[in-house]
Amino acid sequence: MEWDDTIVAVATPPGVGAIGVIRLSGKKSFDIVNHLFPSKNIKLQPSHTLHVGYISHNGKLLDEVVVALFKGPRSYTGEDVVEISCHGSPYIHQQVLDACVQKGARLAKPGEFTQRAFLNGKLDLSQAEAVADLIASNTSASHKTAINNIRGRFSEALKNLREQLIKFSALIELELDFSQEDVEFVDRSQLKNLVAEAMQHTKNLIQSFKLGNVIKNGVTVAIIGKPNAGKSTLLNALLNEDRAIVSEIPGTTRDTIEEVVNIDGILFRLIDTAGIRNHSQDIIESFGIEKSLQKMKQADIVLYLFDANEMNADELKIVASDMQDQDIKCLFVGNKIDKDNELDLRKKFALTEGPIFISAKNGLHLQVLNERMIDLILKDTVSTENVIVTNARHYHALLQVNEALEDVMQGLENKIPGDLLSLDIRRSLQYLGEITGEITNEDQLDYIFSKFCIGK
Ligand SMILES: Nc1nc2c(ncn2[C@@H]2O[C@H](COP(=O)(O)OP(=O)(O)OP(=O)(O)O)[C@@H](O)[C@H]2O)c(=O)[nH]1
Ligand SMILES: [Mg+2]
Image (cartoon, rainbow, N blue to C red; front, side):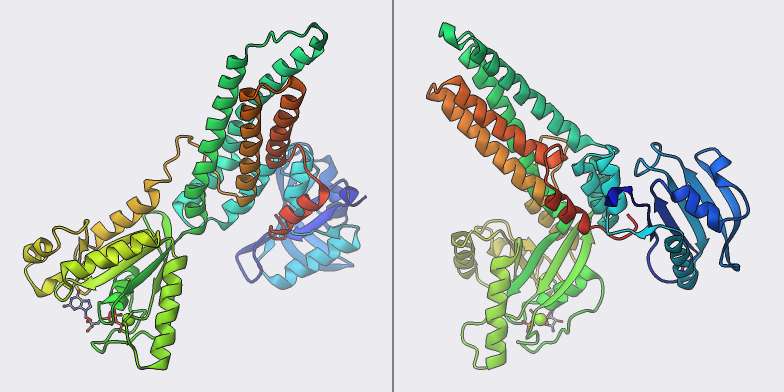
């Protein structure tokens, strides 16, 4: 059985570094390292201790190392774990890895350490997945949600939900035991309240995924507008570097340019596009415009940039209603306010809904723009739970939970018999169980853990 194997992997990133860690987990970990570490008999040492010594194999001295011992079940995987910290040469890592394999270890598959931790009950599935998210986190917000999930905040929210549902199902099943007597002694309105509460809870979690997704994957922002509006200048200003070519010739940007920037802990993927004009004679420019429109539809938010000196209020209103018709989340940004009196420009657009006025070239009011972008993204994603769902698998399972609960609610309204209600409630529990891994199949597990890196 593959779970009986002792597994080994380099746990640090490939390449040269100050140190590299080789990690073993499984019954034979201590024996294998003992063969390679003549300095001490590590089987006689207490758990959670460090030992300095030499690693040698086939009479060849490989490195001076520090060995860390974790006896199961008090280890990451729940099994006996040994970590060998070597010097950071990939050659040494390979040699030590080979030596471990020759002494009976098997190379670990991606995520196999964490998968073992899950199978040994050290983490539930949602916590294990948070480990992968934590490793991948690149902003303070994504780091915070991942660490909260590892600490089990999400699992706890699910546990509460589960308890509510189990309570419900216990009440219903109690009634089934007395079905002969043909009485409904469980108050239906009490049941309805329970289900309504569970649904609210589920919906809040589902709603939080919007924010969770933003935190984990970032927000796509397309900068759209007429040629020469200053889109590339704005991109450069937001990035704080000269990324895109800026020139006074309209039609400078032909293709889209994408760059990532971290604003207040949220990752924004900015897309600079080719300026949109109605009749371009130039084929390449026309292609660029086509692509701009496409990017506009795919983006989470659109910045519609215009030259505040040249645009007139009526035209802006037409663009605004067009965006609204297409259901596009859009901020209107009037640029080049340095060229005229700011108050006059603001007055000109007083009747249109709140454009932001900036000077991309001088970096004026960019902070206001940043704040409005964040507001727009967070506006309808506020979560009343302090737990945020970031994982698409969890999100889809929660949608199923919600659907099952809706069936229960409808069943209650239509006064269907208790045994049918009980089926729907079990269905909701089943989907909940899939999130934490109480109910899973092997393929699904393999798939989830295959997305981890090796050594984790
Ligand atoms: N005065 C002033 N000029 C600006 C400002 N922003 C951009 N410009 C100038 O406007 C011209 C066009 O700027 P770009 O950033 O290339 O405009 P664009 O929208 O990317 O243009 P295309 O790529 O051709 O669609 C350049 O000469 C910029 O220096 C601003 O805030 N104030
Ligand atoms: Mg440009």
